[in-house]
Image (cartoon, one colour):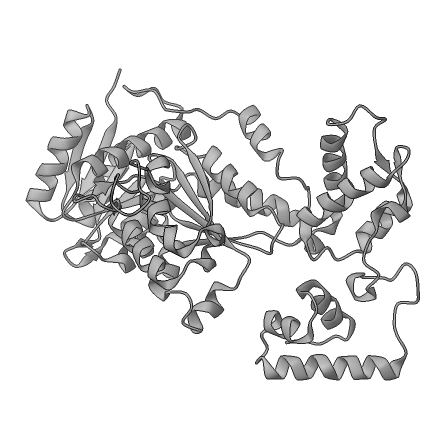
Length: 458
């Protein structure tokens, strides 16, 4: 069985020698290049299972090699070798398509973990047999099972699924952006499940639910006796997620002091438990999410800019339900199927009238709200046909695209007053819609409806 091939590109002989010695112990055949042109010649001549390249190659930039490999050799994972602490270079490399990065001075255990992950990814892509079988293989049937949890055939959801497939190949940190209830954790689990770490732990963490005084212990663990109440050794989220994925939900809720510690752990890939004298290396992928506007929080000084750039290497936007309302029938069918599987009563279904009303509702709580509405309706429903009165939807006209109980618009005088009030709120908040909604005392979905209704562009 042929050995995997690795192309190592660096203009420092000592680095090349170290990498070759380490990789040959893993039964990997290495080819070395010191310039960009030399690397290109090797790529034309051979098919590589992995490429490691330095950021600086004399007058050349390793980013150019990353981009070129991504375009012409997409099944060859490429990892960037960066200077110690050079976060900006690492971020540039990941955005250019690098699989991962490793910092100088090189930690050999970290290098081995990176190489094993890259070879697993390469073997999945090329379907070749390597010395070591991949940790997990994906079939169309496996992918179908994973994607079955992300319902919808709208164009926007097809695009999200395609992005998920691409992002699963990378080790880059992903920032999942979207309103509450859109399914950000579902998407995070899919990225994990389709990636090379699928057989390792997926650890979801609600950052907003941890008391500030316990955060360091919860994230990094502690030793017995390190503080009052530490009766036993305890592993933190980073240790439990070792080899897998750590999903930091509502990351915007982290206090600034914890943001500093988290940044260092992500940059250095090392942590120190409370009461421990030595640091330990961690090999995890970071996914994060929040419903809040991190860009705005950075401007306000409430979220560290360096941490934002570190976690937001790639941004994945999950659209709200109101932007993919054509998926509603499929979502209703899936939710009712799950509810029906948990009851011995007749199988629930919705009338056409109910479905039409739901299509006009703006769903400020998104899919989570739809689930709650239908669960409540099945409880109130005496038989198996869900009627309009079982939904108990809000009576606020602004929450509906078209009012099904009354005429679509209030009288012109009240419309003018309402429009001016919204314009004043937007002016006071300098165009920030989230703040304007808070100032007006309404939900963001309600404000979005009014902006469309009054044709206000901001």
